[in-house]
Image 1: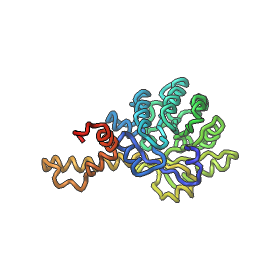
Image 2: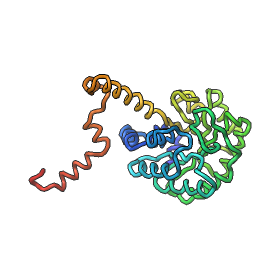
Image 3: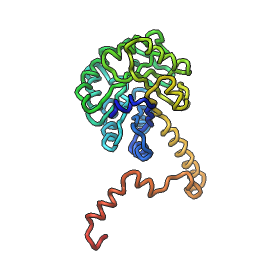
Image 4: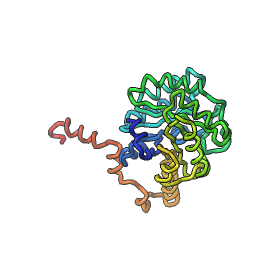
Length: 292
């Protein structure tokens, strides 16, 4: 399913999800795939920056939680692998076990940083690390699991980006994610670099962070620039952050939520989004006749 979505010739648009509420809403809207954002997951779970502060166990637990309720493929942020080669491979095993996933892995030094914030640094070519991940992922290939190879080297090691792409291709990565090109011209050069290395034909993923480094463009423009997948990791939590701050400010100023109804979801609609209708139907079906 994942391979078909990526290669069907259209841009696969994936909203960022980070908890059960955001995932349920994404499913209600009807996206074909979702992206479990590392930034949003760390922020919502720990209230801390995405700077390598969340551990392997915490991220795998969140994958488990979201995969239990996800009806669509889930792209997972695998950070830098959380350690040496064995742990890196083990991390890929656990994320692939729980859902039809695409897992992306970074080529940053540890502790890694959000790719759209200052101070990130790429590490030497990690072919052995990626190969270890791919060997473990092969066991789940029949379930449709894919691996996204992510590199931050466009800005810090520009002359090596083609070499990295070739490495990723030949060790078996399925999708290439070049982080944070800052202009349309840079985005175009990424596609040209791949086109110039036959038979390299890795699908390209673009990471769109509103207010970040990469231009926010139209769907058609991303396609023209050669991208097959677009993730929007920050859209939901930026919208939620503004909305929550607004209603909290109103509540603090007035002592009541009266007057803020226009900023709130309908309670019963929200409950249905979370799946309460199944609970109500179950209760009706199994309650005693006199209690119906």
